[in-house]
Image (cartoon, rainbow over all chains, first blue to last red):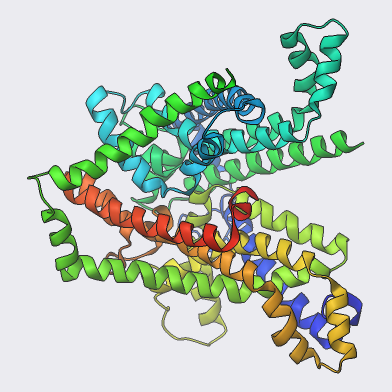
Length: 266
Length: 270
């Protein structure tokens, strides 16, 4: 009865009420930021006294905002490519390999997911100070790669474990070389795993704040670092405009994922 | 031979993860001079102890609130018609995928003295002075709860979905009231999920940096911010390393407890 929606009686409305309130709690702040980015008040008053696009104009007129967005995108793309490639190779080793300590190695590959990011950030910052990687694209890429790679390995090993290796063997029997069989048979079959590895890696790098705060220099910063630095001065609606652009990117990516999932299923 | 395939990933991890973290921890016992002086200073000062305490209080508070809200929502999600639940899921995922700073900024705007919440409450005549909602414990708790809610709702949803409805029917047939079925059947069956989700939210909260430093005040600093401050403003690597080790030990211990209790399934289930 408690697990049957229609037979919950009055409790049904209590549960629905809490769920509705929680959903509102989760969605309204995002909605407010989007609305306020078009509001004319510098003090972010809601409802806004008038509507304007001036905060977007300020965003696009300031080369530092655009540069930060460009840097974020550039770094996220490199991280995505490297993360999927290294993750793919490592996943083959982890799933197909037979060696001592395999499970331990697999667990080790996932540890960056559970370690507090601030510890990694401070440790890498110290290391980069010695080797001169702070404030460089390489520094950002490496730092983001460490936290993105576990997501790749997780999605790709899962996909690879679900793939029947005998299909690949059959391709080899029919005359394909082992590598050819992997590229033309195995990779297309695990493409959903590769795709989620790519999306997670991209978003991990694109949204990453803590590592980026430590890696950034006055001349090289990502969009989250620029937002962070601006936030510490004031709450200017330009941040609301930048945030809304980020939300749009997020929704676009979510829709893409949903569409591709649907496409894969049918 | 296949072991060689894991080498690029392993190399990356050793050079840019394991060695830097170990070296930081080493510095905590070597700088400024060899010994446990940093740990003595860290644990012997009331200022730092207050920060530890505050970190635990905030994390416990956030865990309790997310659990109290998350359980009914996960329950509703598990049984509601799929058309409704897919809307709620879309909202959950959108909130999770929205940039962390964007979400924190939203709360800074909403909670400020002239923010929507204070304006609305004053407009309704409920308060005459703006409530101090930000730069204090209230602000951090609201902001962190907001960030952590999906992390408890999603695993709890998985656990409740797996419970066989027949068990609850049996309870009803045996004469259990709704309330008895809830407290004696449903909640006990969902307890492993609640403990596991709560542990995860608690551990994640302990190490959080961005949200507490933007929504909390100077009076209630948390551990992650202390570590950053030691390193960035005070350039005290010894103390920074010592504070990092404390955070690391607590985090890893709690994960070990979780692994002991629930196996690896939770971590890999993400």
